[in-house]
Image 1 (cartoon, rainbow, N blue to C red):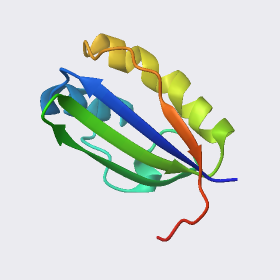
Image 2 (image 1 turned 45 degrees about the vertical axis):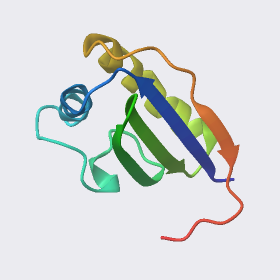
Image 3 (image 1 turned 90 degrees about the horizontal axis):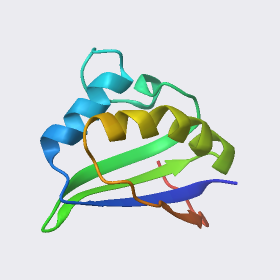
Image 4 (image 1 turned 180 degrees about the horizontal axis):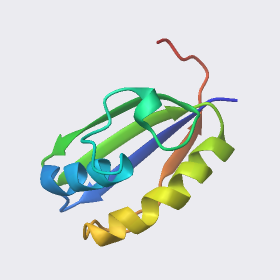
Length: 97
């Protein structure tokens, strides 16, 4: 079952986000298409600034795929100085790509 992930990082910046995405690709730049992700299962990704920090929302094929990604992501977030936040996870009823 597909899931929707919502992450809100208070105080985080675009520079921190770009550092993390660059490190996820092994220094090849940002994540521009699902095949750039270091694990399979991503359906969609969107990120941008908010008045309070940085916002990310993903759709993943399964909770397991997201958890696999999270294991790789967490140390990179810590390295970039981004706050440790708990993702909000919702079951997807409809996904259009």
